Image 1 (cartoon, rainbow, N blue to C red):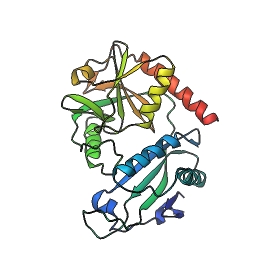
Image 2 (cartoon, rainbow, N blue to C red):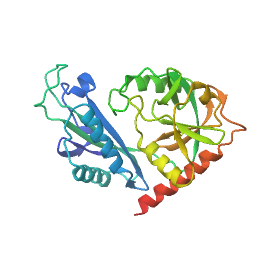
Image 3 (cartoon, one colour):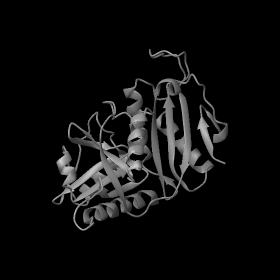
Image 4 (cartoon, rainbow, N blue to C red):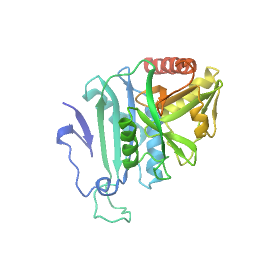
Length: 280
């Protein structure tokens, strides 16, 4: 039976309940993190907790825990649940209060931590993707629970037998509906620069560090729709799937002869890095 943490208590997930007046329910007034579990251990907790702090600061919500406290809670959830956990989900809402758009300062935040199960992916997987207009708000750098646009875009992709939608805003790639995007053109690896229009993915950042260390230079620069369509390789990065290679984009084959040499090299370097981190 899955165990979760809710507002200071550990309990079976099926018994966890929050008020219908919680501002997450009323307004989507909440932020979250998905922290991967790899080889049975929490991975990149420091980076995810730091991003959670940035999201909380961006919505003017005081962090309810210090970093050591977050780490202790994450470890307790890991120990309390099955070992086939794929990730740990953390959500912080502004709490339950009278329904009012104006923020209230005397409200206790709601904190939920739970595990999510599933297989651990250890091979470079090929997926299909579509392109779609980025219909989201302009603070995509905040990991907000207000994900209706992302949900609609992911389901648009699913209806087209694709894994994700690669989003375009004014003819420029921002990110995927649930991933960061990398493009290879003529041996050059590029990814859109960080801004308010895309999430600073933890895997994105770590992948850049690992590949630069391995001698693979990555340029953070604008990627046009034409660049995307002419790409030799397209990668999608996320915390739970590491790196995916796009085989078909809008039903067109990506690259030449279905080969993804740089993606395979990048994936190997990153998985080696993960294994070293988790062995410590």
